Amino acid sequence: MHRIAKLAAVVVTAAAFSTPATAQAGSSFIYNSYSYDTQYIFVSWGKVVVCDGDRDGNSVKAHYTRDDGVSRSIHEERGIYNCTHSEASTTNRVTKHRSQQIRDWATDPYGPWVYRV
Image (cartoon, rainbow, N blue to C red; front, side):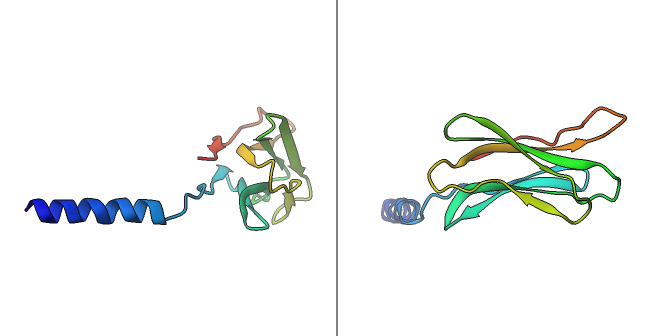
């Protein structure tokens, strides 16, 4: 029994070190509009994209920060089925982002923050 347990521990440890660690991609939804992080030249979390998915006349923003700690935002104002991309970087990667619906006559709701792990 001990031999099987040792073999299992070796297999699990080998698998953990052979699989590269990758950051999980994520989306922040507010109703049908959303922001998501994406790769840039094979580097995960290289940029943020914000997309308008509602035919409601409201625009949508994405708020995000990068490794340098600076807060930024991008704004999609063209309407449903349009997306706007942030600047891209392989060295100053996105650390977190969230979506926001911009309303003229009501409070602007936010989607949840999505963090790079």
